[in-house]
Each structure stands twice: as C-alpha cells, then as structure tokens.
Amino acid sequence: MELFIVAALLGLIPAFIAQSKGRSFGAWWLYGFFLFIVAIIHALLISKNDKAIEDKQLENGMRKCPFCAELVKKEAIKCKHCGSDIPAFNVAKESNVDYLFVPSCVPINEYIKVDAGRKTINSSKVADVVYKLRKINPDVSSEWIEKRYSDDIEFILSELPHDLREEFSMVYRSILMA
Image (cartoon, rainbow, N blue to C red; front, side, top):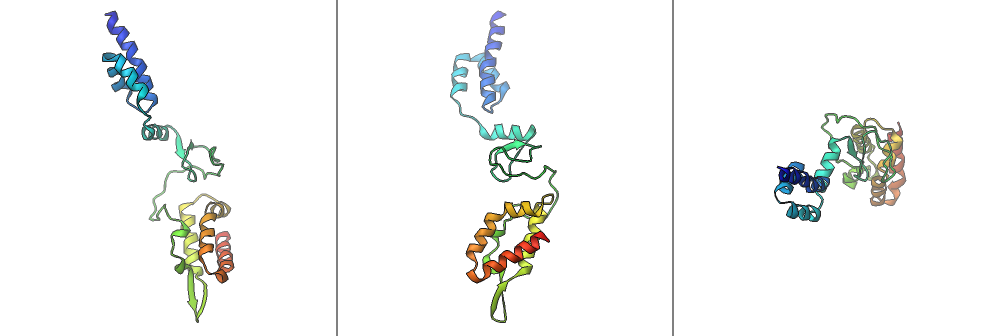
C-alpha cells in the first residue's frame, strides 16, 4: 500500500516538470507513477511546447501585441517588450475588411493618376486606404494610425516618383487628420 502512495507522489515530479513545458499533467503523472526513473529523465530532456504554453496564456487573460507579437496582459495599453501603445482590447467586430491590410500592399501605380498627360496623386485611392485603416483600427486616434503605419507610408514615398512624394504626404495627412 505504501508503495502505491510513494509511486503516486513520485509521479507528481515528472508531471509538474512536463506541465511547465506545456505537456499534459495527467499523462505524465501516469508515466511517472509507472516508470518514475525513465519519466523524470524524459521530462527533464523534452523541449518546451511553446505553442501549447502560448495558447494556454491566451486563454488565461493574455493577448499578443499587434506590433511585436509578444504576449501582454489584456488590460495593457503599452507593450512591455517594444514600448508601443496598444489599442484598448475589444471583442473582434464582424467586418469584410482584410485585417492583414497595410498601405504598402497597394500597387504604387494605383496611387498615381494621369490627368491631361500630367501625373498626380489619386486622392480617391488614398482616401480608400485611410478608410480601410480606420475600419481595421476603429477605436484609435488618427495620430496612432499615422504612427503605426509610418513605415508603410515611408516605403510608398520611396517608391513614388520624386515629384509626387510631397503631394502624396500632404494628401495622406490631410485625409487622415480630417
């Protein structure tokens, strides 16, 4: 009888080690109960199951930072890893907008229109892009959107002809801040 109690208690050791690495507590307890020496060595040598650990943390009040993808508390407004301001947590709203949209995924030639042989910025396309950015970031300020997508806008500017860069910046900023 005492042997079963000792085996049950010893089985807890590899079970706790394996659980800390994202493995099943119950399965490892049984393994430790029947084959303690093998189970303890195995539990110490197995690698972490990062996906399982992350999934468990997401279920227990954590969320990913939209900028660096590190886990932070749901209530956080500033990421402790990258220092970015994080929008307030809200339940995802139904939308037909692609949440992977970024301004730089729009082909550069769509930002340009030719009017009477003269190239200008297509302000309706810029307005469409700003509309999508606001739709996928509904509860944040224009300044936050401007900061968040500044690298994409810099990329677009670098791809535009030199004579259209200032015009694009003015059109984008005026529509965004309106």
